[in-house]
Image 1 (cartoon, protein in one colour):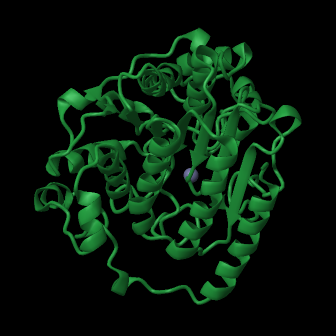
Image 2 (cartoon, protein in one colour):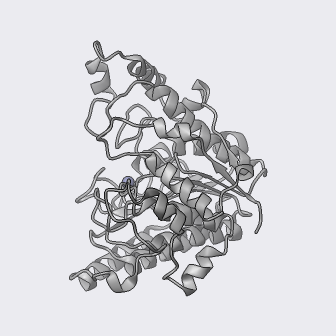
Length: 393
Ligand SMILES: [Zn+2]
């Protein structure tokens, strides 16, 4: 096993929490790291803590006006919040309500993604993972979709500024990676590729195949909007086909990927119907691409994922296991009925409001096929073809 990967984490990152009833729940970080420990795949020597990003770093993607507003709302006492200010900057919504300490904790999350980016670009490690990151909906002057600061955009901007590398951003979250796309929409050195459920039915409503970038960046925003109820085979075929072409057309120096795992059928916020199988395959596809095109340089971030018990711990553990070249992903390819560690199940079973899965993958024979599978696959093929036609050659 090579020791070429860095895991950025601090339990403090669980404090990125809007309120007790909000679906964005970083307890999933605890569940995931605990699963990795019970698998014997996470050591303290691989782990590094984030540090808070400073204002100069936040300014790489956000306006001073917005940062000042976040700071002020972060200090707001419950008696006298400035709702007008919060409204103006998208921080007074059900999705993204301001909360005390929001500036400090989100700057800390940004700092984690920056450490990951610098460690990889300076050759200290080949691959780095920061699961608390991936807040891809935040805009330069607006919070949105559970995201206050956009750590992905800031990390990419830092890579551009310091190392001048060409960055390929790959976003497999079920929601369109809009914040990152708009940040680099006119940039020919940053390519954004987002595969997601079509915005016809899902937040944020953008990510159509015709959003292709502008000016110098024309052609380097690539969107693959899939049909609701898309299943593994069609999802993976669409992703692989376009991703291969993006790589050979763009020739990146480094890959930054966002690993929201809300395209799983169990996820309560979206309608894609994939199983754990795609979360076994995505990390291998990206790792091999980074090895082939980027000398291995790969920065991976977390993202969405709202079934925090049954989906996120397995999906994100599989990501790290692939990054450290652990034997388990290969074992799962030959034996999909490999069980989760009994000690982990034992620890969390009582607390989980739903029965925990017993296996790393979802057993295929318990998986009902969708009634419109043929039609959905065909529609996805058409959109995949179109995305390929639109790609620069
Ligand atoms: Zn999402």
